[in-house]
Length: 181
Image (cartoon, rainbow, N blue to C red):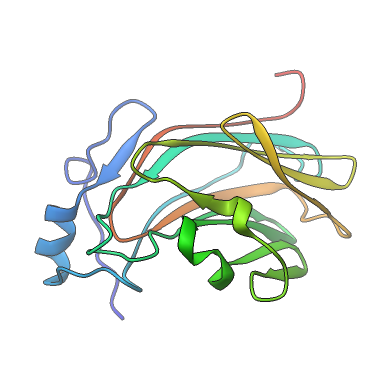
C-alpha cells in the first residue's frame, strides 16, 4: 500500500484540531466503504523529555464514518515511547471483541478479555484521557475511568503520538503533559 500525504488545507487544520472527511477520503482512495482503510495523524518529535512512566494525554476525537462506510468505526490512539508503545483502541459498541490494546510489551485481546468499555457512540465526539503513573496505565472516557492495566516495563520517553481512524475522523484537541504542568 502506498501512503497518501495530505496538505494542511486538506486536513482542515484548526488550532489544535484537524480532520479528514468522507468526501476527501473518497476522492483520494476511490472507495466508498472504508473497512480496513486507515487514516492517521502523526506527531513525532522530542516532547521535552516527557517520561512515558508519568504523564497525561487528553484528546477529544470522533470517527466520523457513517456505519455503512465503516462498520466498526475503529480508532487507535498510540503513544510512541523510545522503548515501547501504549495503544488504546476504540470502536463502535458492537465491535470491541476485535480490539487489541498494547501496554508496553503486553497485548490485551478483546477475544480473551472484555474490552466493551472501549466501545463508543461516535455520533458525538469522545473525550479520552490516558494517564500513566505508578506503573499503571489508566484510561478515562468522558471523565470516567474505563480501563487500568499495569505497565511492567517503561516505554522510555514520549517520542510521538499517532491517532488513527478506520475511515474519516477528526481530532478536536490534544494535550500531553507531565504532572504539575
